[in-house]
Amino acid sequence: MTLHETACPEALPSFPMPRDGRCPFDPPPRGRDLQQEVPMTRVRLADGSTPWLVTRYAEGRALLLDPRLSADASRPGYPHAAAAAGEDPSAASDGSVGGGAGLSFILMDDPEHARLRRMVQAPFTVRRIEAMRPDVQEIADELIDAMLAKDGVVDLVEEFALPLPSLVICRLLGVPYAQHEFFQESSKAIVHRGATPEGRRAAFTDLAQYMGSLLAQKLEDPQEDLFSDLGARVLDGELTAAEAVQMGILLLVAGHETTANMIALGTTALLEHPADAARLRDEPEPALVASAVEELLRYLTITHDGRKRVATEAIEIGGVRIRAGEGVIVATDLGNRDPAVFADPATLDLERNPRNHVGFGFGIHQCLGQNLARMELQVVYPTLLRRVPGLRLAGELADLPFKHDAGIYGVHSLPVTW
Image (cartoon, rainbow, N blue to C red; front, side):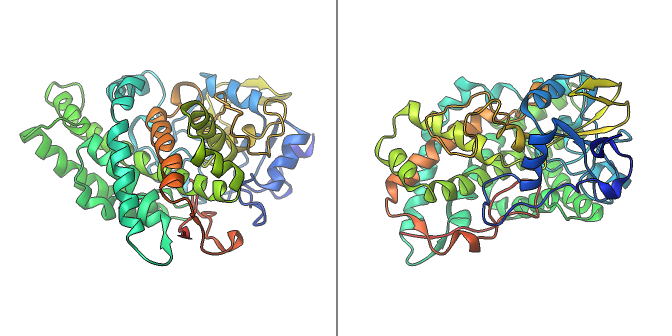
């Protein structure tokens, strides 16, 4: 029995693994070392469980396609991130959004997953998302106008990165933006890596109560928005009110939390690569912008706690045997830095156009909102760099408060000036 298969938890690498503060855009050094050694290894979680960590791209993609792996966080053996999360599946943390069983289809298996997901797919098609591009451009310009009206140092997270996707998802769902502080704080409580089950449950309950009240309003007075569409399905008997509320919470949390972090972290990376920033500012051709967004998604991979699953049957892969009931964590941040797939993976190359990256996951649970996120980022980066050509960090990179404490990586604040 090798170290990577040992049943002795104390001898295994702990997970999540710490990053190197000197290289904040890179996956943890221990993870990169393991990737060179083996495609899969056991790791130790805070609750003492020892799931498999998948370190390489090929094995990770294969497993995310494998129907013998379940995304159901209530199953025994599911690799909950928090030490106490296993006591309450609704409090489970997942790197994709940070939710649990209460967050609708994201932690369900087919056929129920497919049934619910189909009900909200239409607004996220490429055609529908492209029709939103002028509105997103207008929001970006208005936020930048307000930011430029201020003097001195501003926090790009609060002034731009967080409000833009929040405004967009609120419009899409039909949620009043006046409530943005409430749902943003609730989202933070759900995705925080160190949150207690009680804290996550309380935040989810607060959101559920608010969304339940909003659903009642949509049933009485439907509008042209996604939450009204879900309300219509409730009236038709296709959904229960509880299911509609859970789906609304999932879309609200996922729709702003991930994109906000990607805007801030991607901007930080570009400011640390001034030649690349200058190209996006001065040569914003659609092909280059699209390639740059894909490369930033690959390079940064903000869902840095991996995609979590549990085996329902035995699986032979990567030279190991995953037994039924054993947890699996697909480290997509490591997969996106796999040198067998991406040449010189630690280098940011805006012309790489790595559309095969796994930043949005893979398989049936691949991110529903990926088209929306791509479009928002394609608008945001060149617009911000063009409108604020002197944009720069107001301090040192090493002093930024990176989100080592969250399931979705980013920065808590981004002080900038120009």
